[in-house]
Image 1: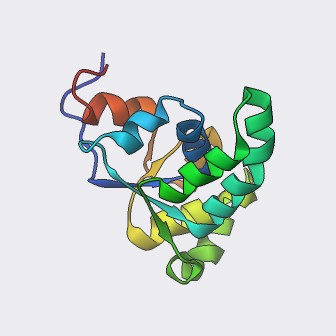
Image 2: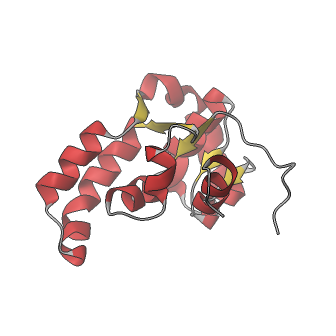
Length: 146
C-alpha cells in the first residue's frame, strides 16, 4: 500500500515511452488528460523520437499514423527546445553512459529544470534523478484512481 505522505512536484519531465503510451491509449493518457495531473515537459528530441517510432507503432496496434501524429501535435506537453537542455548534455551523458545513452535529452532537461522524470524506463534510474512511474502519477494525482 502506498503512503499518502508521498507527494509530487507540479511538473515532471516525460520521456518517449510515456508519450507513446499516452498516444496509443495506455494509462499514461490519464496523466496527460487530467487537469489534476502534473504539468508535463519534454525535450524536443523526445518529440522527434516519438514521431520516428509512430508509424511502426501504429501498424503494430492497427492505428492510423496520421491521427497519431495529429494527436502528438496537440498533446498537453510543454516541448522544450534544445537550448534549454543542451547545456546539461555532458552531465546527462555521463550519468547514462552505462545504460541508455540515447536518453540523455530527458535527463538533461530534468537536470536543467530541477524536475523528476515521469517514465516506465528503468534505465533512467541510473541518472540519479527522482523517477515516477505512470502508476505513481495516476495514483497520487487523479481522483478515483488507485
